[in-house]
Length: 105
Image (cartoon, rainbow, N blue to C red; front, side, top):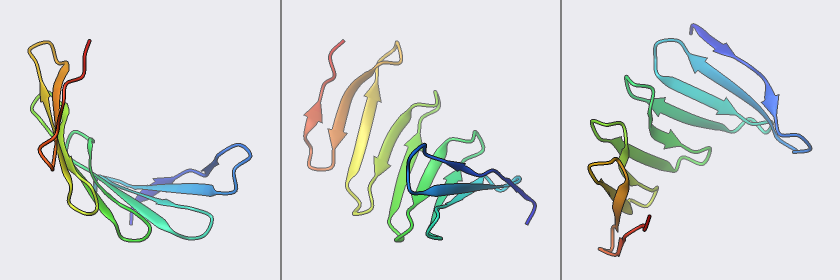
């Protein structure tokens, strides 16, 4: 695999992270000091569309044509949708149970 990686860590933190970016695959794998991998998959615009955690839990994201994170689903498939107004402000958040949140500006 043609990839590049760097070593980084949180100051004072117990986990050393090793990100590995596979060239042209739109995938980044981050291994922690315990050997557990988290996989980040990106679309052609390099927006993260899928995160697979070290225990296999998958979170998905969808983006609209303006690049806003417009929808997503957590590992137990609870969906969240965001609506944006003409000025690119998030005007409504709709949760999987139908509950709506209207962020004020």
